[in-house]
Amino acid sequence: MKEYSHPRCYARSLLNCSKTIMKEHYISSSVLSLIGTELEISGTPWLKGQIKKLTINNITSNILCGNHNSQLHRLDDYAFDFFSLLKKSTTMANTTNNIAHERTIISGKKIESWFIKLYLGAHWSGQFGKDGAPLKTKLDPEKYLLDNVFNDIPLPHDFGLYLVNLPIIKTFNGISITSYVCPIANSKILAITCSLLGLPFTISLREAIHNGTGKIDHGQRHPRGITFENGQTKSELIFDWT
Ligand SMILES: [Zn+2]
Image (cartoon, rainbow, N blue to C red):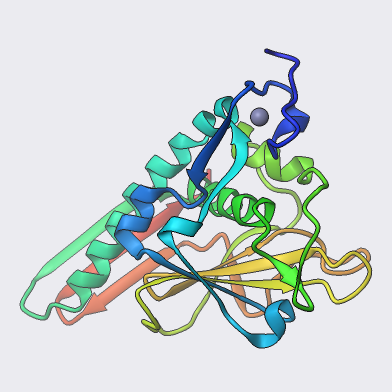
């Protein structure tokens, strides 16, 4: 088993695949139950400006073997705890008769890895595209992305999680993912923005152009945290990046 590489597992280059492929939600169902069961995928030039709508039933995919799938459950468990806190904080900030000040430390690295896992799952199940056609998914993911989610190795350069200081906009009860595709040459996805509970999280995935970086304009890489305030109520979620 140690040297086996399952042809349908996106982590096959790591070699320790099991023989079975798991059909699972690539956004874990526990997280979906918290932040909404609808999914919208958009992005220029994907779908030529249209939005692709999916429901909880059609975001399952056979993209990881049993062994690699089970290795990532820890990220889903952590994401569930984080989004539970985020939901509690947004609710608290909307309630005026509370006097409270809460401060919670969260591992930014684990949340960042969870977003990378989300990207890998959505990409390798063929959800992203360009000019109305799915992007090819035959190639293995970059090793630094696999190393990040499976081995906790930090992402290179200035890739990773960014927060852009935007007001919270509750657009719809679900998750929206927008992809930014490189307009030249390889058509690879440079970054995605996931809006969860109305908060936009942007994840830079690779260099934008030759010798360039994946830097997100006007965004803070590895943000210090998120603060929710309403009168006497304050909830701080602090990201630990060590
Ligand atoms: Zn595998």
